[in-house]
Each structure stands twice: as C-alpha cells, then as structure tokens.
Image (cartoon, rainbow, N blue to C red; front, side, top):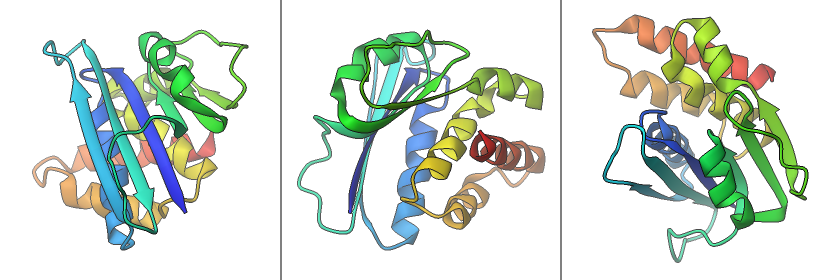
Length: 175
C-alpha cells in the first residue's frame, strides 16, 4: 500500500499541521512516511502545501507528481493542484471557500470545513475537520493514532484547544 496525499491551502489554515499529524500517525503504525512542506515567503495568507507519502515499503522520493488524494482548502489550491490528482483519486474540497469543478474525474467530496469550524467556535480547526473527512474515506491511518498524535502535540496549558480539535476531527468523520 502506498498513499500519496497533497494538502493545499493558504498560510494560516493549518496545512502543515494537518500533514504533520497525518504523517506522525502513520509513523506510529510503523509505516514508511515522508512529509514535504512548501510555502511562499508570505507565510500567513500566502500559498502553502505539503506532500505526505505513506507506504508499507521504502519511499524513493518525497515529491508527488500524481496524488491519490488531494485536500484543497481554498480555490487557489484547487485550481493549482487538481491536475496533479489521479483520475481514480479522491479529492476533498473545502466548499466554504471553493466552487465545484465538474471537469474533475476523481471522486470529489465537498465539505464546508471552514463553516463547521466557525460553528465550533474556532476557525483554525477547519484543517482537523478535513483530516477527519479524509480518515473516514481512507483507512490509511487509524483514528486512534491520530488522536495520540494530537494529544502529544497539544499545548498542555490549553486543554480547550485539544478538545475543540478532537470535536473537529469527529465532525469531519461525520461528513
């Protein structure tokens, strides 16, 4: 099994964190993993993406030419990366910030990640809603290991952040 995921959005949307949580969850399952971050000099508000490859075998390169899954958190990212998705792939789009593209052959799942995050009281958890949706569609990494990573990474002095992120993950799985 090899799963190649491109996660893209704007700086400040938690793109790198989403990729890192996914990658570390896979490491807990003794899988081979690469995580390749890329972002513009603007950082917050600028383009940001990362590539995560998870495999049962050694990985030759962290760069992904054709992805099995694309998670697009905004329109600019969807437009930029949609052609890098395999026709048999899965595309998760943040329909709060994107318009549907009927020319895409891959299976497309749209979720209002940003709107749901706002309803939860923290717009910054849209990334964990997207991750929850991904985990519901692909069984690449177990939910339990993702939760272990989230608990390890959460600031100890802000337990409310962990709580809202766990709720966001749950909402994403329900989509």
